[in-house]
Length: 261
Image: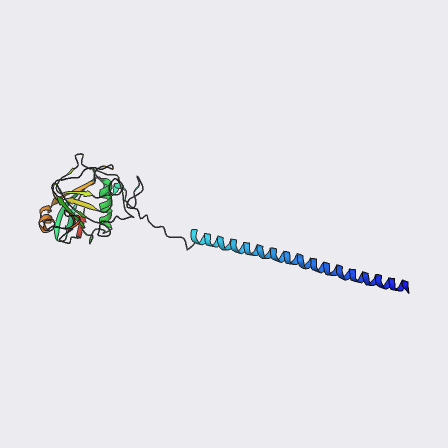
């Protein structure tokens, strides 16, 4: 009997051991499966994130979402560079003649493509693109020994065109005196590469001191009609702006036509 009980207890112990071993094996398999599943999930997340990142990179650098280059908002070109300006050979190193009409005042003009090839090329390009008609003359400045009418800004208020600026300064007078009838290019102070669409007409012999960049590009001259401009527009006075002698002309003035040949 004692032997039978021992055998029974031994059998039961073996059964418990087998059950325990089986449970441990099942637990081990489940643990490995959880680790494997977690690893697969992490790998899947990494792959999906990587694909999403690559897709966005492609979309915004080479695909349809690529940003449209925008032009610079600076008032002038980078030092020593032109923006949107034509080859100076466009001026053909010759004299261009034509007519500039302000309101109903017709001014005969000559542009010197030999002395100011880059500036004259800019005028030829603007003429070809029909840029000037309807642009305003936003500034009239008159004081002793100084008289100019400034025209051609892109916004009608003297703002620069970030898509069009050029240099260098050409044909500036060595004595800083711009005779009556001179057509010269306006620019930002101290910046030889900020010439653009804006120009000024000297209403009398005008002294403009050079700054660190130099003088102002003389692009041409008024050959006829200057007195008519003075009588009809500039003599009517100034609406004070930056000073009593510098502001908008009291007679609103626009470029109504330009011809060149």
